[in-house]
Image (cartoon, rainbow, N blue to C red; front, side):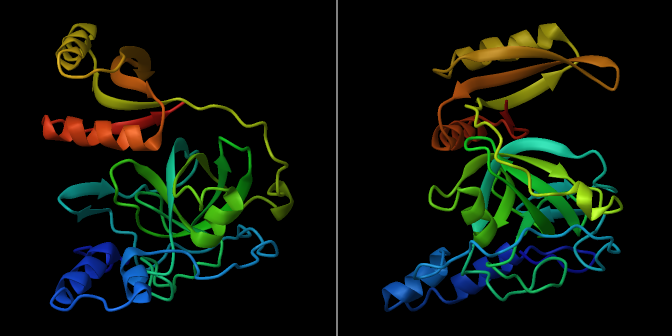
Length: 275
């Protein structure tokens, strides 16, 4: 997941290139296949003593903070600041495949440390990540770029995913809130588990300043999809906006399938909304 230089290259792409180069000979053992797939540790690991990341003031990383970069044909704009950032979405995790490799910030990736990867937050950023489905909360240091799967908001280290309770399932619904390291450390205690909720997922297909255009898209989608579609009124920069969203969707798998279906129909500006 490393990003380097003015023309940014994702480590995920480097890994892909290495995989392609090695395709002339197939892996000869289950262990070799596991390394290609990415996975957790081979045996049980006690992570109970791994502490949360401790927010502290650090300069912006020399690496991994271009104003913008491109991965797999998609452009990403790095935020100038993490101040006020708070978003819900789908979390995934990464493990042995990247363990020990250089992250976008230049640090070595440690799957047993409380770190994470994000597409647009400046590096480093400290953030509280809360599992909306079980109420667990952790603090991580975001020091890497990714995940570059369309529907994922954050990629957690194996340790962070395990402590949050999403490692076994592979994904989870989370809220990510950036923390201000200038505040006293006492303001960042480990919070008690919050009451779990049953969040709803939607795929946003478009947003319009005109209700008429939003309704037209909704009608078009109703002809090709077998899902509920809503037009959600909101305000952005003081102006009305009408967001066309498909859902609610029952699982991450259904969300991924719908996104793939919509992409085949030519929709490219898709966004997962978690409420």
